[in-house]
Image 1 (tube, rainbow over the protein chains, first blue to last red):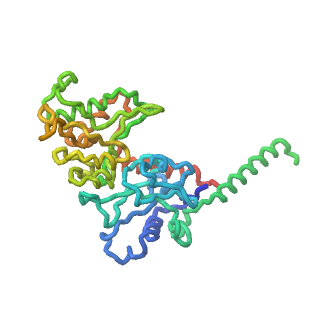
Image 2 (tube, each protein chain N blue to C red; image 1 turned 30 degrees about the vertical axis):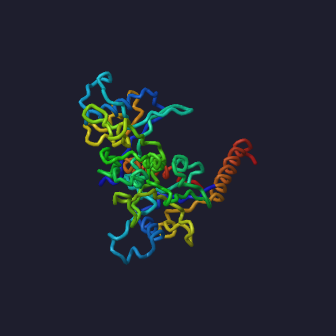
Image 3 (cartoon, rainbow over the protein chains, first blue to last red; image 1 turned 90 degrees about the vertical axis):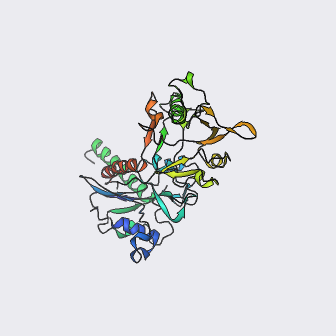
Length: 179
Length: 187
């Protein structure tokens, strides 16, 4: 089963540190040293703020990903508990963006690359669980209120198992109140 | 918010009945730009060249058209510079197109067809050949046509819609955030 990062709206204060952590993890610390206009700030998660809540939304790394199913060039695949986009194969058709029910995918310009008519080349961008980076997802590490959690298959299964046991025990107690 | 992505029209195979009203409307509004044609099909003197293609498949039917890709393979493949991005959309200049078919091969959706080019009520001839001049015929999102995409307007089953990808993404983000409230005690 794929892993995913999950935000808790009760803990999130909407500070957007996760977005900066994400960009630093993928672009490097140079973003603090160079001219802000010379790179594109493209976090792979999206801060949602409404009157009722604030929480970042990112890819759920679905088990049957709709994005992967619609990609006409096979640029999306699953590996190492993660749904990943091969940005070299992507040609920006936005089909995945339309297919994703969470709005987890956006299109971002590729620095220094252009289409044949000189206009910006844009490709799909989404959470890759910081694959290959030491320490795991940067958003989880940098969140000051610990509002983000990496959920693994084991944890998810354990939680479901614990809930099943509790449900069974509750049902048992109802039938045999004296025991 | 600044519009940064090309919009596109998307068909819904659960609603489409395959009536081809979209194809006819598409041809009609585009043909009117360059040909003095009447308002009914019987008065048309040029080949019918729709820019979207009603496609029947094993499980149903739906129109297929251009996604106005952000790294458009057709645009990148066009050696003649006949395809360019205009106001975020991928647009073919039929005058520049020489019918090399590279864009048709590059498009992974089959959204481009090479169809006869007609102007002023007649098919454009080419020298030294009995065959008419063709051009890469694809959706231009009805640029310059009042009322927006004709296919969307005429579909009797509302099986076509215009997708503003970024706006829809943001709406979906909000729904996803609200769902997180329901699953916050997952442990």
